[in-house]
Image 1 (cartoon, helix red, strand yellow):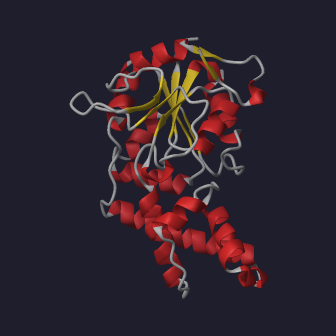
Image 2 (cartoon, rainbow, N blue to C red; image 1 turned 180 degrees about the vertical axis):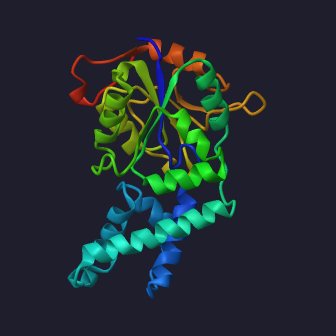
Length: 266
């Protein structure tokens, strides 16, 4: 297997965005006249399900089941989520975010190495644009050969549909790619499409079961700030660069039938 592409998740992987999402949800709920407030602990629980509208629905089912009788509930949830998305974009534009260690460096090194770049996320395109506007610049989106978001794959992770969509656009098998994820749902989505996955654990995914990942790291690392190895192939601090990813990929056995959702580390 030869490394030909790197596929990035967004929330929690490119940047620690989940805390800003939580604050944006709370502000949208308050603006809607509700006294609901999601603590960090409650939001961590809600993150077990992918998708903002899905989290709102789950919270209503668990905490305010009487709200389920509201007329046109699905439309109300969609409007609330739209309001939250605008609040999130405004917060990002105000400078409340930065990329995680090693992200910008790895993206630039991958481009220089001639690797394809892609995004596979269940967040919206609007959220991706807001993040890039505030960090690398919107023009950096042109560096990516495929951008799979909620609009392209409505079935959320751990479903593999967004990865399958991205692989089709890249015209590559999963075995020639490496995914960068931060959650168990992300690992399941990537490996379900036959894509080996590296985890950079985020604040909200700490302690999750990352079985099936190549390795679990604190972040992608920098030469002057090495990552910490939490689990995986190499128990040696360093920084993730294309050559290291290629060596990790060589140690992976991809099943012939990728529908099994298993990627075996040799």
